[in-house]
Length: 132
Length: 141
Image (cartoon, rainbow over all chains, first blue to last red; front, side, top):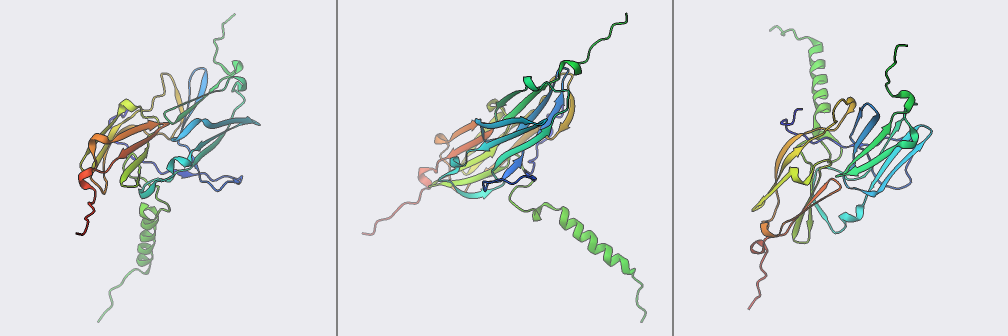
């Protein structure tokens, strides 16, 4: 692991969506890691400022849609002097493959990082084939 | 007097190079969000006091180091991104590493009354203006 390397800020990417939003708010694409373990696919998204109750994860037609909303009222009474990043909601969607067990999807939010656990279905698990 | 021969295309290529350099440089980017020192901060004024907000998703409170002296605030720490053993990575956008940046604010800060909160990956620093730095109102006698 390159832990000693110095960290640079990443530009927030604004969401370009085919659908239109009905609220005049900015949406950003959360930076995401996707990795696979033996029994699940893990999707980790950075959604700073999003409370647990403001996250929605919806699964429809094999598309998992994640939306995290920030609370803009926290910025009431603050006068911006100098800004380096914009603040907005987060949204991103992923298409699931057929190998995911749709009933067992789990989500966990900690320190502004949302982790989705997409367990592989039994049929997709690696298994040992015995020679008869 | 003979004119030195110049390649008519070299000027064109120079223009193209200049345009490319302009396009790839960050200073023309729209919006305030661009690569730079980590973590990106927003600085606000709240009455006389200063509020610094930074997005630090995935960083534990124990991995953040904050220092205040005079007008300068230092935000340092490390961010680690773990995948566990035996994971195969499909997509990697989150960055890990160490960071150390100092932000100078326009007023002297009362270091004893500084408050820091970190919730949901957002670091909020409340920096009260030092009493001796406040403007004194003078009554006319």
